[in-house]
Length: 173
Length: 178
Image 1 (cartoon, rainbow over the protein chains, first blue to last red):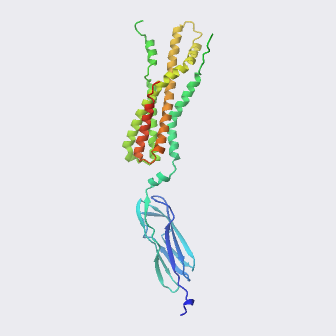
Image 2 (cartoon, rainbow over the protein chains, first blue to last red; image 1 turned 90 degrees about the vertical axis):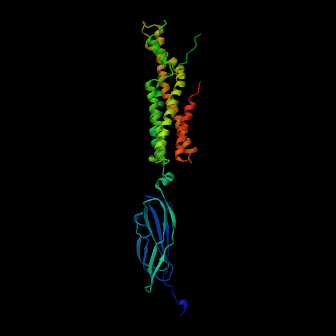
Image 3 (cartoon, rainbow over the protein chains, first blue to last red; image 1 turned 45 degrees about the vertical axis):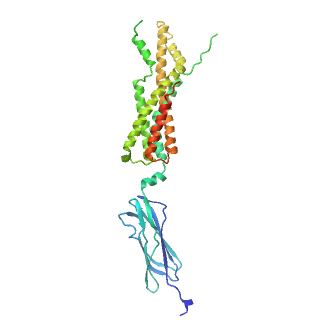
């Protein structure tokens, strides 16, 4: 068999990557999956399954699906898929790999995995707010609490002062 | 002339350093409001939990309220004497204008009324001015220390040092003699 005329079967490379900088409880967290067909033939019936990575008692799925199906990925092309989830509690969490399955041209079934992002920390919302949330509303309310007695005193003082202008007595010779 | 009349006693008491009841209530109300406001700021900006911080908040509020009311009273004594000097001529002119047509009133009585009016006006103005001065000084020092000098200190110590420290400093400055 001439090696030069042989074409390679479809081969899928997969990656999984968080797009959000911080994972915060009760805030959206974005994940992106990428599938790259580096073979010479299209891949059929491609699936991504990441349901075991994010149990429903720890995460809410806000947008997107953790199990997706692509009928075909042509040779030399790629597919990107995103999911938005929301952690329910803070603490350390281990992000595991997603499972990718596909069929090659001659009906062979292949199973591969994405990379594993590893262990990350889900921040408490209070800590996140302390660092990043805007603070001017609190200062505005603080000013409104403080202003009546302080500025009120000053205005009343000015009012009383205006009634009694400073009189300079002229010396009589 | 050995015994003081009621009018003379009243006139003497208006020179006293003691504040009137209304002035005292105003000082206490102001101190209460100004001592509670930073707690809201620490709750919002420094994210202190209410359940964990009740003791510290109470300590801060009580200490600050006491020191601020003390500072207001001291400041009022200082300002009252200065205001009497400044307003004296204008008040005398007012009293002279009011009772110019009254021929029956003696010069002594007019002078007594002018003195009483002077002290009354000085009392009111010094109350307002001392509250404004004390509040402005306390809030400036508290905000600078809480959010600039002690920004990286734990919120509990930040709160205690910035509020009670600022109030203590204001109370100390108000003890000046002039």
